[in-house]
Length: 489
Image 1 (spheres, rainbow, N blue to C red):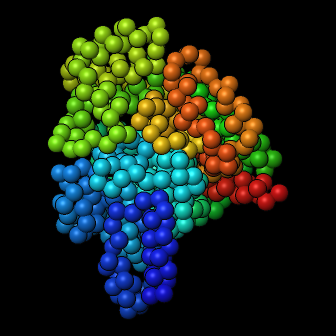
Image 2 (image 1 turned 45 degrees about the horizontal axis):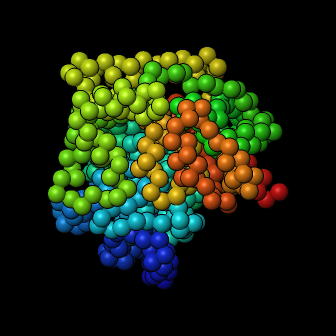
């Protein structure tokens, strides 16, 4: 009981500071009492964990900050929560999310804005932002979030923690709220968030068990491959430091090159990798897949709701009539080519045939990406993560910057985030000269979004091919170990 009280008090104190909790789960105390009576102790015995608001837990709502669902209580735990309880874990809080999920800020009209525990002028990222704040601020040691465009990875990057976004279907998603029901072009993933990589591996070991495979037969029965995670063989690692559609800021490029150097010094082979070009751009393909209807289904969720200010710009963009989007795209092309491409992507598919054509482009791109990977004989890939943490209010104005995360959502590759350093004074000076080469106002917005970030964490993405979560984690562990050793020096 003492541990339970300490965990609750620490979480409550953090919540008062940053507003990250939506529900305290009163039954966690009785669950601990029942656990003590059991003869068999699961691998998560007595470990308290936090849960993203969108994940179903019996007796609580997963409303996503939308008023129509605020008091609609879930009738049973989702599969992952059932499995974690069987393994001895104790869910003790649910955490805040952005309204309707599809935003990498973290605010809604029901629960308000969550602040970054490392700097209250910064956002936590989203949509698993409450989890990022809870773990990054020390209120929870591990939690469960979901990801469709970067929702596990943004909060982890912004709050200086680790996360694993698995291949879709490696973990059950039954009982998890999604931004758009029925949409399958871009799949949602469930994944763990924690202070360190070993904790992520512990959760994956616990989840990849017969209980999950039985409760959700759509999940492939693939237990955790311990021999891959514990291997120490040198890796052949591809890397790149930016994306042409939305160039990385100086601090992020530095983080990649310093991590590359550490890996080379540790005996790994680093190979320059250029992601194949995708016609129209990565973010635009993501929009075509997820907003095949032009975004009307997503925008309709806000009818009768108070629209959160941080969703206003993106929802307004989706509500623009098709003809107006076409006209705006034509007129803006000479001055705002990136916005022009985004507007074109938000024009709904004219037919099912058009939607299938977009999905065919996605499939072809995946095969082209894998072919380049195999040509270079890569094991894993080191690449940038959007960051450092944005100032509050800017994510909704820079949706196109999600190219760094949605790339691997489109490909359905497992991708993890590991903090490797912090923003320096020199990074801040170099930021003043940041330019994308497009000479549009997104350059100015990007500089304003990340400015005053001195001391904030910088993270990288570690990527593997589909179904290779253990290799992804093994690579993440290597990066984490090397970065920690450098910090000690």
